[in-house]
Image (cartoon, rainbow over all chains, first blue to last red; front, side, top):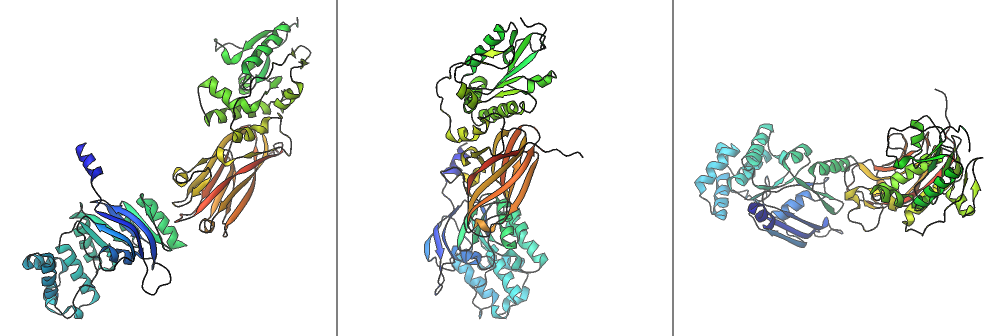
Length: 228
Length: 304
């Protein structure tokens, strides 16, 4: 009972209030008035057709893009958008980028290197400048780095975009099984993945966002939207 | 003394004047030197109607159980029937309204079976003047009791029963207030009938489960949709819960729409209108504006 009360009284891990985004020069906002909470351990899907603002929202939550209105308040640690390779310094090698991230997050370089190398399977390619990586290699490095640092909440933008089927399986195991108690926010078109791993969903459409407490209903509505 | 009269049945539909009417009928039967039996308050459930007995009941189905038909149906103040049902059975609206309408509809059906139906409006004209119904039954109608509060929407819906047997052209408005709504679609709105269609395909509106007598009945169902909801496909069902007509509509433009459907009731039965949204919707508002129900004709039967 006490544990239940504690859980009810606990503040959310993420609070988003009246969030809006208007790109510079755009005549109308991409979305406005977006408000939701994410509890610690909560799993929220972000659904929407192409161009509706899913990736933008993930980037805003990850601190890559600034909010143009409203407020994002994190009360737990959050990853950068997983698979997002925009933070790499292209002229530095994979090893140097790992060293840089280790310092930023105050983690031992050897430990992080071992974890990234073990996961990304890039081997000696880590010695090459990142600008010479293929998009797949870049994604592996980004994903490996994302998982090498432990976060309370992982921001995932289209997991399907990362690597081949075997690597994706590995990613899913690493994320959803080994980190089963963490929070996730996942933008994806893969409704099976969403239905399996998320308990709520936010659908963004034509500048409006709605939160669905029933994930199956959200997937159904989204499927209709895609078919329209 | 009338010798050797076979068992007779009288139907008295529930009303605020129920007790007074039962006493008046009992008195009339007694004057005819017949035995009055109140079938609704019978202590011996296994008893069967006998010669020289007049049985009274509110439910026109009861005589059928004995292979008999009523001779007279009294339908005083039908708009007060739900309250009477609620008092007698300890139930409440909307169940009392549903049950009352079923008793009223079954009573009306007896007209087609040869019974003399004395409607609420006829009784209003007669007032308290004594009148004869058969060569042995003469009745002194009781004084109408006090006015009882009846929800306007229910009174309007039950006006179908005011004249007893329905005639072509008879119609009544079924207000949006007597329907049921998808709980989540209606939760954010103050007034009945205002709906947020967001969600999966589902039934948005259903009810009102008021019974209709046998006949061909037409429903004109009205609703309004906004710019988002008008893009979705809707389906409207009209009939009983198990047997109904359907039509689908995709408005494609915001506005008010009226959909007309006809269905045959072979016997009295509860009527249901269902308004479905057939597609998942991200956004949109629908205002259900009620329906007008009209009697078209007697039921038409064709041989299979």
